[in-house]
Image 1 (cartoon, rainbow, N blue to C red):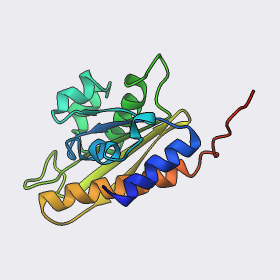
Image 2: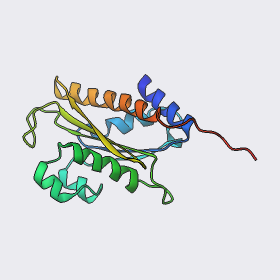
Image 3: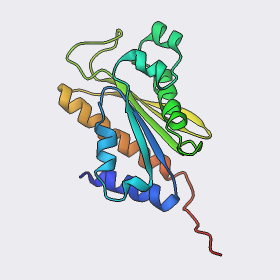
Image 4: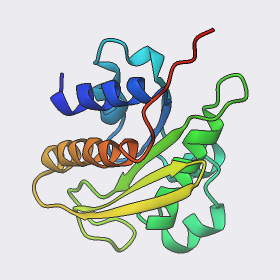
Length: 170
């Protein structure tokens, strides 16, 4: 169990936030890292592995024209994947507070004209979506592991922007 994942689950729990995950190149490793942590069921709504590009559109709502024009390894695709996870993995019509996505090239070959190690993380909240571009090196397993680790770092930063949860009594 990753210490980073433990910290993310603790921070989500402390703030009363939920999260939904959309993954491509990490193939479920990010959501698995989160749900390895005891108590994760209180804050992790679920995850989607949209490994095939068409699923990014049909399941997560990524603009099909965008995918056709730019391919799956793109900052806007990452933002739309994160937004799609947040909205489409809603529970009782309530979207997740945070959506995160991973899309990129783990190798061994380039994809969509992008070199191996090109990765985009998407982060979405009710206030909008952003992306983080990573340029990683290493073998396929190393790149995928680094993406999970960096995703947890980015989640920690994002969660820290939310106020602490104030329980109501009464």
